[in-house]
Length: 311
Ligand code: ATP
Image 1 (cartoon, protein in one colour):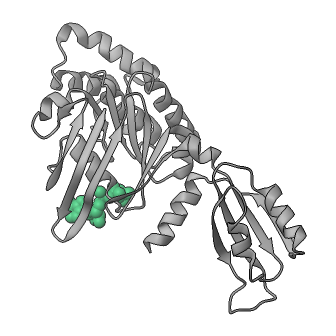
Image 2: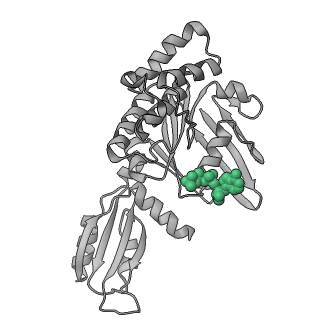
Image 3: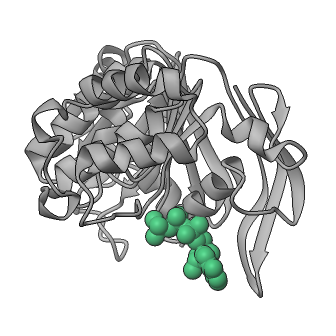
């Protein structure tokens, strides 16, 4: 549904996107994650045809967005980061105006409007001026305009920004419902939101793709955290030699070479449960084990590791 090849974009001396390539299959819900200034909005603006890249190409549903902008846009529903608001217009008035501007044929307008209104739960608010709606309902209006053209692809830039926790859950449920009909790409810097919603997370930092992870794979990933009461010289090499271990990171060594302080090791596995083997190795060698526990990878742990490497 989305094919991005070697995309670059600079604003003056700021390289917002630096040779990005990615692929999103039909039916996926993909979270585009990254810290402030990572390049998410720039990528989304290029995907939706509102910004020209300096280099590279973007295809949506097989259509070259630069060469056939309007044809591509007809297949995309887009919720911009700051959705335009017309505070004086009623919800219904605004949606009717958008439908007309989008060139939706008159005879189809009524059905499209009522389907978008129903999908976004706006039935009770039709007469209300947009300016008097809560932020959550305004976002729903933004979503309703995005799905008016029954898009094959929904692109949502920070759909939950500014919402309270209840509204965030409602927005998440709404996006999940809409994903039954459209592929969804949304940007966010709320990791828990992405974790709850998406099949796959693409993390970008400094304009580059730094990780592309299926949430199901992350959940299956195994690891263990081992805390020793004092530094043990051969702990790292012993753990590395255990079956199923892919790597060992020394998280803390007590600092300042203090051999009496705790040593914390993160053991990364290849899918096998590791705690039993680690426990056996530690017991055999009389290591001063203070703590041993399974350590599953989460989006947050991946993100934090990348953020540290990025510094
Ligand atoms: P946020 O989460 O804060 O919205 P983002 O990941 O969406 O950030 P972008 O808005 O794409 O990031 O910005 C990427 C970089 O490009 C940032 O350094 C930003 O300051 C810069 N930038 C974005 N738009 C412009 C512009 N119109 N002119 C100059 N620099 C820009």
